[in-house]
Image 1 (cartoon, one colour):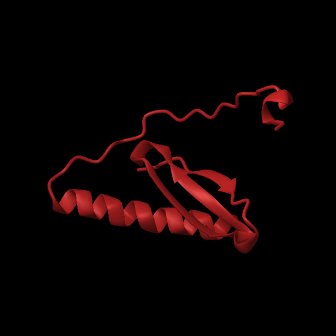
Image 2 (image 1 turned 180 degrees about the vertical axis):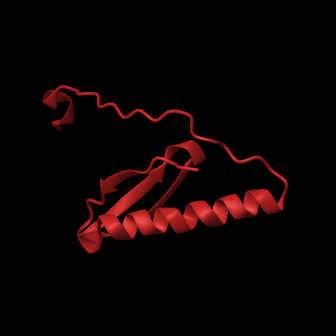
Length: 80
């Protein structure tokens, strides 16, 4: 089974080089150092989450389709 992971750099000085790893289908987020670290953290989180759901007899969402889109807003909205 595969799950999409959206990676996003963390923009805080103390986390330079770290990335958020979002798993939209499961509504989970983790982080790791570098892209590889974030993907590894996501895999560990997904496996633990699925194992917990299965042990409770709960269903696990299956990703059927993944799309990523961007929305552009005017720069003027970002100015103070």
